Image (cartoon, rainbow, N blue to C red; front, side, top):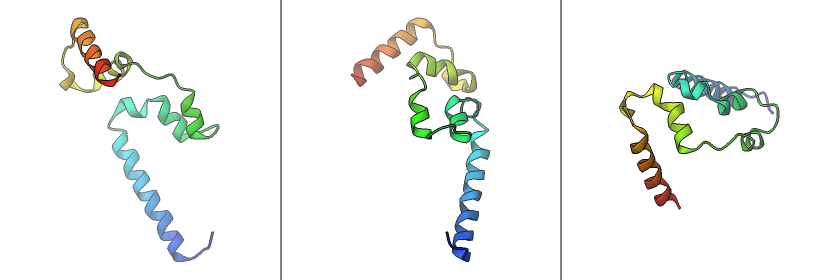
Length: 93
């Protein structure tokens, strides 16, 4: 990599935007506490490969992860959740 001013500007700009990204992300606890972010920040192997080892979250598990952080979710009882999951599965498959 050359030591020209153009590369320094590029690196400084990338650092600035990465810093902004992390500042915004810490406002979403379910993101900064996630296994995905831990892998991204401190990878022990290729990030894409490492992510494939994570279990795929079901709709229910995903909602359990994010519900405490969003009051717009409201109280969703088990019957309503089953109905929503059925509609999602019918749409997706």
